[in-house]
Image (cartoon, rainbow, N blue to C red; front, top):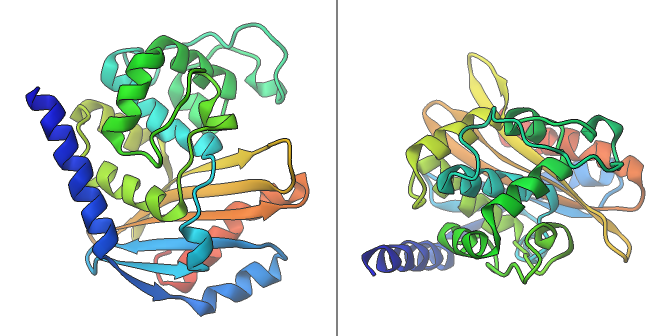
Length: 263
């Protein structure tokens, strides 16, 4: 009972703060979207200033299926409940042909998250199970917190959905350590999401590619920058008219981060 009350307080507090935040329009970011000929949004959460710096706020508030960006949350839940011992425990991919040939082998989460191996994370979700997964998503306060009844597809097909703004709030809670998740799981996920480390900053991130029955596809890139002992969670999503647009996600996001002085 006490644990349930704690989770409710965490979520209620997060949602109250989300409603109270200031938003700062960043029109200077628009040129990068124009240069790459894509429509989308970019959000940077300035935690210290308690404000969202946003390009295309209407889009940033729109909930969208998270696709492989959910691998961050999936990893947290799996490690927290003990579905895997650690990020190097090898999981089976299942032996079936995969969309990407490199996915057709067994591997741990450390490697699987880098190559966004869907099959490995589906196996993790099945090990977590529908009830523990449903409870875990609610503990994280992740988007609309709806997973339906298919444990290994809800982040790919829905009903789970999350906005770019909510992505940054979730990542802030993760980095801050305010999620009701074991510290060991949090540390492990921080470790496997690290993309780049320099003398000036650390960059963590995860891409997502939503392939649905309707056009356009949606491309995601979410993560955070640690710079001068400050945290800057960010989220980008774009409409993708073709598979070639997937390659634009990280360069576009990096351009936005550089323009805002975070890289």
